[in-house]
Length: 207
Image (cartoon, rainbow, N blue to C red; front, side, top):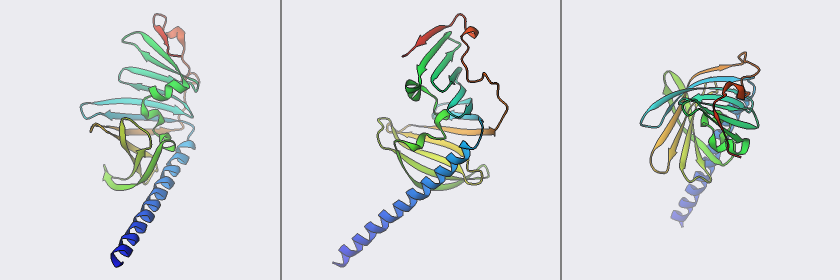
């Protein structure tokens, strides 16, 4: 009976600890989300490392709209459609907002992706480049490829430092934010695709 009582106590302590960790993780994530929503816009320089090579990119985000320059491609999302401009093939791929969700570079949804389809819990804290980084572990509730995601958050600024996707096959990818600017003066046409700028490009409509 004593052993059973001990096991039951351990079980309840574990459940309670997990619930507290999940609550703390949600609180921090919500703080980050609220802070980013307070910005008029964000300009992010980032690196992407898939374990084999590292590539650099830049993203400008304003509300749901964004422009991402990455690996020779430019992605423009105007709030309803996404345009992927490929200068090497002289092609523009056009997708609806629904299709864009599966096409976009994850940097564009880095700040809000966790709100659907994940459970999360408190993870380790590390000092990286002089910054105190708290990691939140997110586990997809329904994913064929991703096993878990680790989101690193700067505890001082409450901004995201990096995101690590761990795949079920054993590989991983890391997005690290190198610089972060907010409330910049942007061109009013920045998030608008202008077809006349690409007169010889093939327009590939996915929808």
